[in-house]
Structure formats: structure tokens, C-alpha cells
Length: 233
Image (cartoon, rainbow, N blue to C red):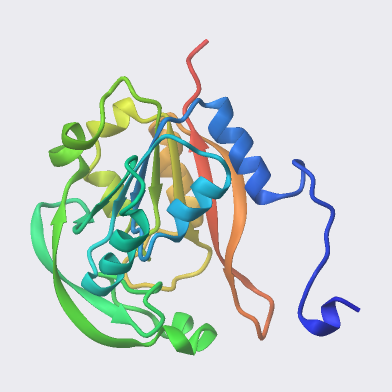
């Protein structure tokens, strides 16, 4: 009956609910600082606060319009800082493609497979932005003594962010990032290769959740994965 009205009623349990499992992971790893890369309008920060996370959030968002909304949401939270630039593998200025739905905006070129599955993600413009390496600005925002979660949602630019954080990753034991199972952006690194990259840096996959699928075919297109580097025995 609920589904006929567009709703679903499910049992709320830590073993099956993504939000509860993620909360448990953050608590288990004693995360006190989150680097929110690709924050858009601040949805992830709001989600963290709704889960009871009380640590520092540093949200990076290069798009000017999305940044203004992000800044508004974080303005009254003294432990949530909004920063108006992107992270990548170089310190440079670049052009970002602005998507109609904002969320799908990317430095990378969108492929037809993405547009076919989500026509609302069509690019409608471009904007010049500033890009910095995490290694360049890491000490400005956090300490190597913090328990840091690096969250990356950059629409096909995730590997570039990782490559700009080679030194910083030594102080970051937990990484969450979006991964595509099929090419959606030009030059993006796909699911299996991204897992290999993180495995090579000592991280193990500890959590997966659905992000984006083709509503017409049911095919899963993107997932969020959380990785953690456990102490060596």
C-alpha cells in the first residue's frame, strides 16, 4: 500500500541500514575530522550531523552557486568550514562543466552512457575554478594527529584527488569515494581499478552503498565505497 504512494517501509536495523552502518564505522575508527571533497550544496555535511557526528567538517566546493548554498548551511556551525576550490592532482585553474542537476558537474567530459541514464544531468555551461592538491593545503585544515575521513565525490575525478594527496594519505586511514561500474565520464577510473589503487596504498574495502542506477534497466552504475587502513599486525 505504501509503495503505491511512492513510499517504502523497512525495518530499521544496523545490519541493513546504510546510514547506521556508516555511523558505526565512523565511531569504530574514531573519526573526528572529515574532508568533504565535492561537497556541492552540503548534503553530506547535513547527513553527518543527522548521524550525530560532532567533529570538524571541511567541505570543498568549486562551483560558485553551489558554494553559496553550502556556505549558508554551514554558517551557524562553528565546526563546519566551507572552502571555495576543488581538489585534484595539480595546483591550477581549470574549467568545470556545470550540470543541469548540479550534482553531476565535473571537470571531466560526460559520456553518452551517463546522459542516457540521467538526462537531467546534461551540461548547461562552464565555470573557471581553482584546483589545489590536498598535499598543498593539508596542514592548513587538519593535523596528522587527527582521525580523518577523506570523502571524495568528484564525478570521475576521484583518482586525480588521490594522486594529489600522496603525502597526506599517510595521515588518513579512512577514505570514502564514489566509483563507477561502467564508464560515465571520460578518463575516469572504474570500480575494480580504484579498488586496486587503494589496496596498493594499504586500504581495505569495508562498506558499499548504492549511488546511481539506470531506472529503465535496473543496472547499477555507481556505488560509494568506504576503505580503511588497519594497523599492521
